[in-house]
Image (cartoon, rainbow, N blue to C red; front, side):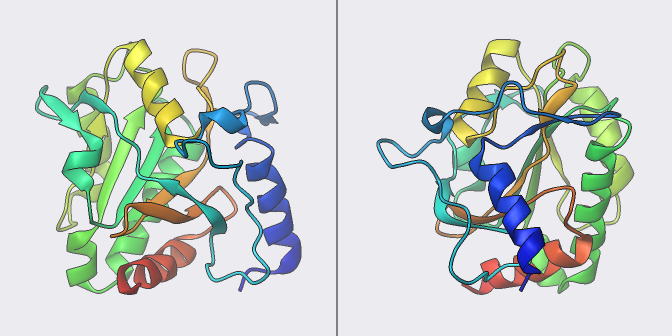
Length: 222
């Protein structure tokens, strides 16, 4: 169980709208997501804090639906996120390759977590990194960047790009706020979807690779 004060702060941050984080700078409240940004239909806004925490990450009692969006994949072809990842543990993150801190730290934590779990579980997990800087992050740039983290893993990370409108729609569908400042101000939330196509847990900069590894085991075994 996460210490109460950590869970409380995380709950406040996410329920306030998934605060945007400036890579290389401080968190900012501008551009926070509204209730309507979640892909929940007419459901009420997510309540993040449960009576008891099940996960080491941020518990999401109002789970996030696996979003439906299509972007450009590593081979330059359309990648339908919902169809390609349906029914399997999936980690989804929005960031950009020139980010100096949050993005590489998150990807490194994910890679360490996957090296620490059973290889059969690591093979099931799909990691998807959606750029918030599509003007720079081509499929080739994303492939080179993600290759720094996943080279020895059984399932390679997938980098997605597209035009700005498509990136904006993907963030909206996932329930994270749209990035600002040419993508440099973006959500730090890492969402974990399970076989039920729901995210019951997410992670932020306060979580560790051990947290991610432990919750992957819980989600895969659910």
